[in-house]
Amino acid sequence: MSGRKLIVAALVLALVQIGFLSWIIASRAAILRNGKEVLVKVQPVDPRDLLRGDYIFLNNSISRIPVKLIANVPQGASSSDDGPIVVRLKKGADGYWQPMAAWFGRAPTPPGADEADIAGHVNAGWGLQEPDATIEPDYGIGRFYVPEGEGMAIQNDMRVRPFSIKLALAADGTAQIKALMDGDKTLFEEPLY
Image (cartoon, rainbow, N blue to C red; front, side, top):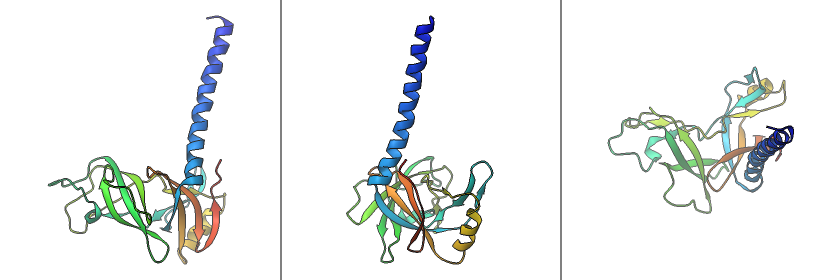
């Protein structure tokens, strides 16, 4: 391969990589800018990642879904399969959104005006038959990184007063964390880019 062809191939590869990264950033920013906002309560867990710095692990009010809310549990299934789940949220009188229904796979109908769907993933093995059974979907919103040195202070504050996260939900249910809230006060807001 001549030197000119090698340079052209390297430029094409670089442009493809830049295009892919730009697509990822732009799709995340589009959700943050245009997604439906929902507010979810959070609870503290552990504030430190040795490689990436301080974070807040967000155990939120939609982390555990009662199996009785899942409308399409397969007949006779004793445990969940590995796959997608959609949880329909409805805004409560207190301003926080709570699960009202869920479906393995896709929702059969679009959400109403005062509702929103959040898409998640369920691992195999969650028990479906116990009367009070719950599952824990992964929505991809489990951590929120904060400036170094602030994670422990926020974690301690979360133990004494209510915190929440403001989510932006795309039409397909993909969630992005838009802001970390301390009561009505915005502590940290995610930049679009």
